[in-house]
Picture: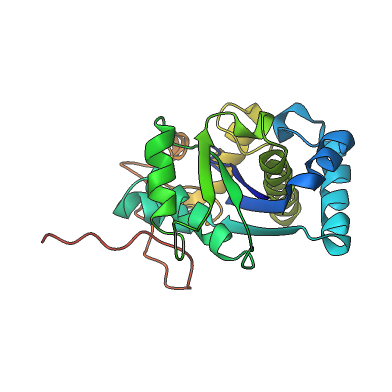
Length: 244
């Protein structure tokens, strides 16, 4: 039996990407994840997350484990919210990483860390986008806090979180100042947002539709922040809404 775990990192931040990762391994290998200390990335120190991320990558090369990571840019997130909503965008991202896995023979459980207030609805919206779903002899477990219950989701959580953290560190170096965690409650991030809209320009690594950006924009300019242009670079997007 297979276990596929899917989780995200960076849903709420005002800076940087939203990262979704999936991880799969046979049921007989789950004890190895538990033994190594794989769990909800939020309950691990940054140093421990980095160690486990490297371990997961190494073991995936040696064992029949697979993973896929996708980063959705702030521009894609803004576009998604202009066309639909963040929950819909995350359903698209969750199904995308699952579709990137190799074909798994046999039965299994698809374990989702639900991003919707309704876990059942979230699962339905993800699964309707998965290729050839329903898979024979597979079931779905969609719940809040799945990364603290299912080792495979914990692994996905670690892969997503370290990918996002590394990107934020990279952006801090690129911008020349500390961006903090990227979360609106972070004082370093609040200061960074003000710097990133200096001279009436919204930095592309900001999420323009976030209230934190709107508030900072009003402090320095008049009116609302500009509307993000629709990107045409192949990033995943909700479909354009039609009126019929």
